[in-house]
Amino acid sequence: MEKNIVLCDTNILIEFYKNNPNIVAQLNKIGAENIAISAVSAGELLFGALNKREVLAIKKDIEHLILLHTNDLVSKKFMELMFTYSKSHGLAVPDALIAATAMVN
Image (tube, rainbow, N blue to C red; front, side, top):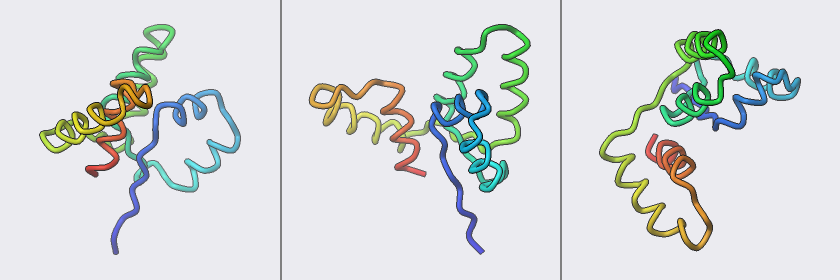
């Protein structure tokens, strides 16, 4: 049986930390073992932490998720996305890296 992994963008996880009931319910339904985040999203969450206590809590939460790292394929897809959409659509670097991670994985 193939596992259905869901790659969550940073904004979804921020809503989880805000206790948005719809997001919390959906993530609980998916299950932590099926939730992936990109290394970029992990970094964005850590960057947005207000203090060391939040950094440690986020780090602990990340350890329960599937962490997807960048690699050669992700880098190549990232460059394609930036070439195609950075000027025409204002695609930002973090969003392009997250999108490339999703597309490759």
